[in-house]
Length: 155
Image (cartoon, rainbow, N blue to C red; front, side, top):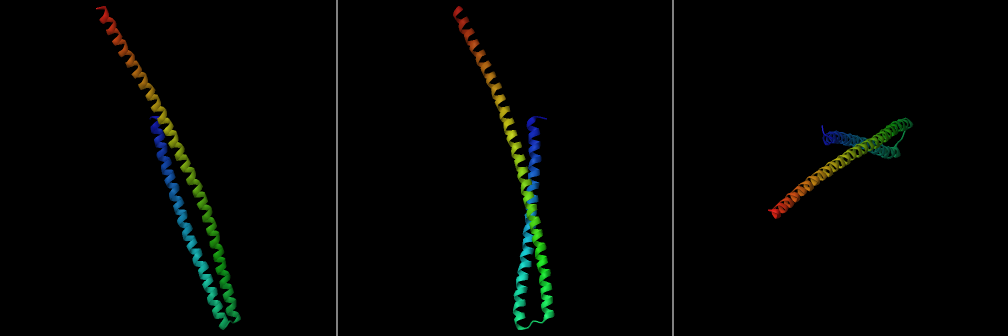
């Protein structure tokens, strides 16, 4: 197996790893959008509930109903706090996925650069070999012409 084939195989593996990292990042980003949607729903529901309560409390508010409302709002705030921690966790996952994707992109690019350098070295070696062959051919042609010229004068 040639060096170029080995590099190409390594690049193919690196491309698959990079693509997998991109897919993972996209999945985490979708999870973030979903978690943010849930957070938006919770906060909207909390503010709507508080607004409705304020409107109805101005008409009549008994202590038992007030107690239930505060308990409900405490549970709703707990759910919002829990969702905030979920969002922070997903944000951490996004950061890690971005770092991993970047590392895969750097690895892929470094392999591509190494392949380009190896290909350039092979091309330079081939060009030197071709130049040597051309020089030898030109020297042989020159020697033949000189021989012909030298033998032509002596005859």
